[in-house]
Image 1: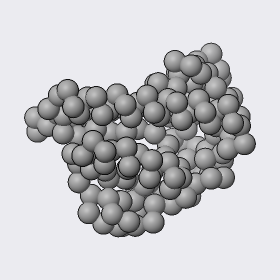
Image 2 (image 1 turned 45 degrees about the vertical axis):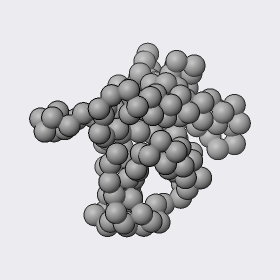
Image 3 (image 1 turned 90 degrees about the vertical axis):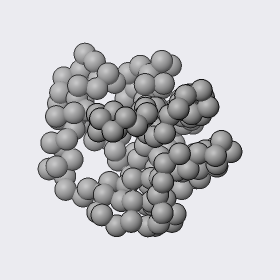
Length: 165
């Protein structure tokens, strides 16, 4: 974001987790299970709210780049985002970051996620175990970006044209 600010590009992050925390402030990994319909409904409602905020921001400001910060694990979810953005003439680009190195994943969790607002009052070890289980829940339904238009993954492979608003 600092880089965009330095370039005088109006940009903003829309974090679905922040919206989700208003209804579910400290969910455990089970909340993110694909077999938890109440959790799925709550996560979708938060995503809908964040997406609406993003569209409102585009229409009410000179905003150029919005980052829809969420775990958009499935093609269906990404298609919903893309369709919603297209209705407002907002172009999308997806960034996929893949990592199969367990030591790097755990290092990231311990350095970043254990201090997340989701884990207030929890020991770093307990938070790390729970977040690792959350990742496993995401992995159960994850569908990779297939290289269609607007995709770039963390391995440096571009799949198509990617542009902002």
